Amino acid sequence: MYYDPIMFTCTEGIDGEEHMIATYYMRAEMPVEAVKFAQAIAAEQATGTWLNVPFETPEVRKKHSAKVVGIYEVPAYDRELPKNLEYRDFIIKIAFPNVNIGNNFPMIFTALIGNISAGRIKLVDIEFSKKYLEHFKGPQFGIDGLRKYLDIPERPLTLAMIKPDVGWTPKQGGIMAYDAFAGGIDIVKDDE
Image 1 (cartoon, one colour):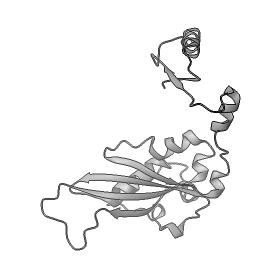
Image 2 (cartoon, rainbow, N blue to C red; image 1 turned 90 degrees about the horizontal axis):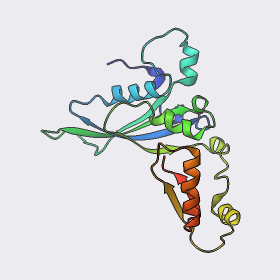
Image 3 (cartoon, rainbow, N blue to C red; image 1 turned 30 degrees about the vertical axis):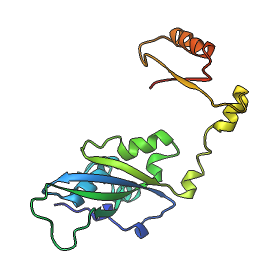
Image 4 (spheres, rainbow, N blue to C red; image 1 turned 60 degrees about the vertical axis):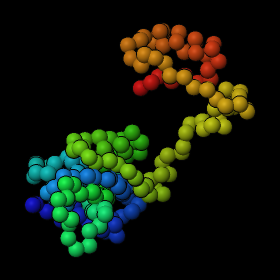
């Protein structure tokens, strides 16, 4: 197994203000190479390569590589694996440099899960630094702003999705939205 020391450290080995930490749950059939799998996920989701390519200098790798900061087996077997074990479960924590993602919320999900082509892996948590979160001011209106904008201070707000979710023109969408509003709906959204 190839081990890339640039891609492994402990949480104390990264600048917490300059990284977000993604926590994944992974289930793997036996035999398992969790370290190799974690390294592959980190490479694929950050620099996008696990091979040496032109222009991927040591400086680029140091600045932009994701780093595996934890691999934990659950349950943790103390001494030996049970006989006839068919699969093993792991929690994998990977630190991603904020500089790779920028201040773009959809890009967070693209970077953390968008290119993973393995089964049985799930993103279960993201830890953001306070510095990173300062770029996001919250919803444009929030519930109070929506109530004020719609002039509905008390009662529950209603929302409807336009169906079908594809295949209609803006004019057709306007007609469907108008019909929903005429029927008493407060907010209309498309389904996708």
